Image 1: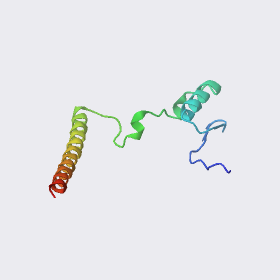
Image 2 (image 1 turned 180 degrees about the horizontal axis):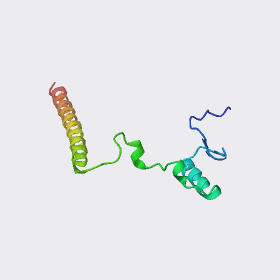
Image 3 (image 1 turned 90 degrees about the horizontal axis):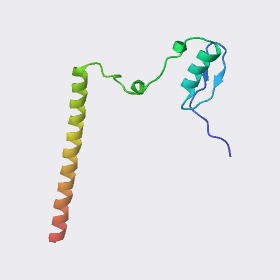
Image 4 (image 1 turned 60 degrees about the vertical axis):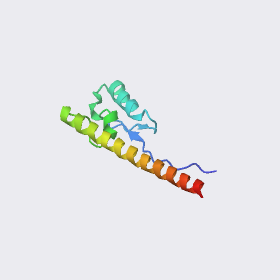
Length: 100
């Protein structure tokens, strides 16, 4: 049995080229290595946060927050309306099939 190829890349220390194996903590490990081993500020490798994965990034002000809330509510309302229509259609079909 051959091992499956991994798509994650190993990180290399920019100072000494030490590789860090792929894991969920590899960024933290690299930052700690830079700070402790090389006595440098880890700003060379910036910290990642939960906002990096969100397309629009961090919420900037009240206007942006309200806009995102409205967008979320519109999406929820659209899904709910569609679900109700499907349930009503299924109920009508069920009643029609029982009438025969």
